[in-house]
Image (cartoon, rainbow, N blue to C red; front, side, top):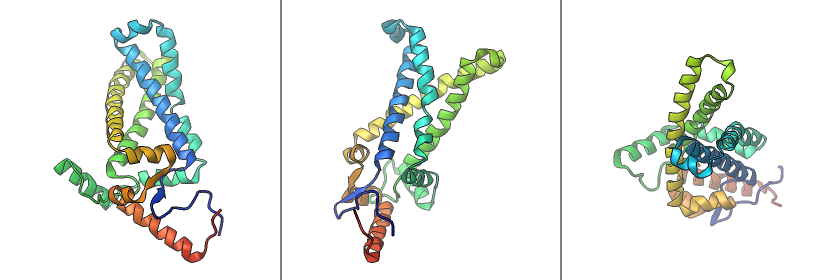
Length: 224
């Protein structure tokens, strides 16, 4: 059996994200924040007057948007990141139960029927991934104006502006949800979460990790 690259889970803590995954999230968050912030300064006259250097703002906005997919693409070399992408891409029966409860009662029963990622996180990730691709495409049309007809540029501008507003609202909601869950923030900051939190918020994932730990112990897999 190969040696583990990550420290083993303990009775009180679980490894939620690897170092590579945390840096992918941080880099993506910084680029997304810069893109949204510069968009606000470009779109709102009151904010634009505070800076004045519109050409600089345009350049920073264009390059932050262009670089946004790169952390994810670079992260594909990480096996753990690819595994989490597969988890995000699967929507099972327990996810439909979670979403139905959230929509019907505006809350989720505890323990929530969720794996490593709940249905809300999966939908958010799917929308943001698709939106980034649309924003990249429409942004390129607006950037290279000589390559497309006026009708395309007009439509691209309309889609780009309104989708940016929707993304801004969703990101604000994402930050608000994160502000209410210090343990989830600790998982992104350190990579580790309390097993009790995992059992309450992501019980299916906690059970999966427990079974894997028990199987490793039974096999006598060595740890570093």
